[in-house]
Image (cartoon, rainbow, N blue to C red; front, side, top):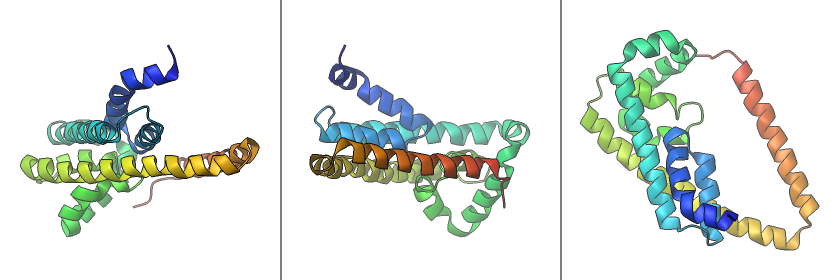
Length: 186
């Protein structure tokens, strides 16, 4: 089975699962695949919206009905959970709509919100708005990144593109590893 067939058969399901669990990278890649004609951009955005929305709703309810799990198992998140709680006190609507855009808080926020007095209906509505905005931004961003990348690659040698990719990957890995090795600060 070739890559095009795999993408068209399982691409939307993979996108749904990927955005249910995490998100940005797989959505940007799906936008790139849509630019190349392997997927439909509107369906990519829909699948990403559904996956992100469902994942965060699930995390919210885990936080709501399983607080002991968060308290005992996720001690490493304690500092970030406290920070989310402080942000919610000051800017609840903004936090609930935009948390997907902040690295380090994207995964923890719905769990943390579930431990607060934010109503399930309020979270449902604001989570839906946020998931929609996020899916459109990153889906369209990936699509236009595909255009820019294609134009760049038409004029550059593959070794330049490969070198640039290697340098960017090394910088990203260095920053990711360094961030994870640091102790969380409140």
